[in-house]
Length: 217
Length: 224
Ligand SMILES: [Zn+2]
Image (cartoon, rainbow over all chains, first blue to last red; front, side):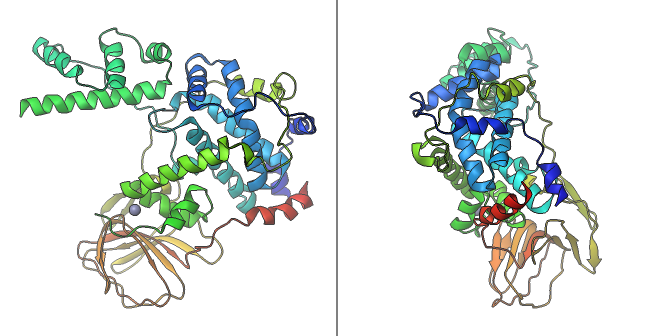
């Protein structure tokens, strides 16, 4: 089966697994609270923080590897799964939205989707990368219309309604429109991923719009 | 209101990617249309994720108890990954199929799956999708307004997901989102007034793929 061989590219990380055996228990390897993982994702998303990524790597790698062994039945493939999953975390961290679910759910989803695509490839030799369409996780980066009309009456009304928004949305809407921060700056300031800023902004603006529509009825 | 949902066992298996592709697409598409099942799926995923990624005793292989020294062993992989730039995603655009002068937007789960031609006989059109596994056949089925399918039984189990429109048979009236499983003892003769588009899997493989790693083991040994 030559196809399988070409799929299974030479993995130069293979040797790493040998180094892993026969060592003592890592004292740090204790359950990490969710808030800590959230903070690390935010650091990766906003500042491309390699150290924070290292923390995530250290936390998730053994679990992904073990999951890969179970599902793929081969050490090298399990290592591929670690690499692909961790790579997705690094390159797509800005799309993580903490309001939609825990970091662990997000990572699990990425890992399962990558594993699904890998299994399709092994079993059917199909170049499928459709796991993310079957279990969508990455919210696409819809641009938000930031054009505002400058009607002072309207602005006044908006200011009143603004205070009615839930805190999380209010912070974001105020940051963008009153303090004129960029979404990126706001993400860093609030220490939340950019994806969360975008979704809170969208929710906040939708709510404001519905307040206004009610007002006009 | 959607009245017919996949069984819980199917949703659970879907959450863990244990279903064959043709069925997992059906469950995913149903969840896109059904907030109830979507919510259940999300809760289930939260639970499974926590089990898989945070419980201490989930490391079943020899990695349990290993020390991970990021300084030495894994730094190459980490360096390679962190050299990569962030990736942006193109906004999702649904695939559209056209039949009998009508356009249908398909659920996201069908993305990239529909590229074939329709074969049409009267009011009935079928498009085979290239996602068959074993003996199962997956296709889109369109019945034009006023059409019906003569009474038939099923040699095996049949799964139908109603994507758009309506149809009814001896048992029920169905509407978009309904997820219908008929076994071989059921005969029925569906008919539609306004027309409908369905996704069907005949000989629906409802077995799960849990055993797949067992199968892969010997193959893996052979190759590597
Ligand atoms: Zn449902």
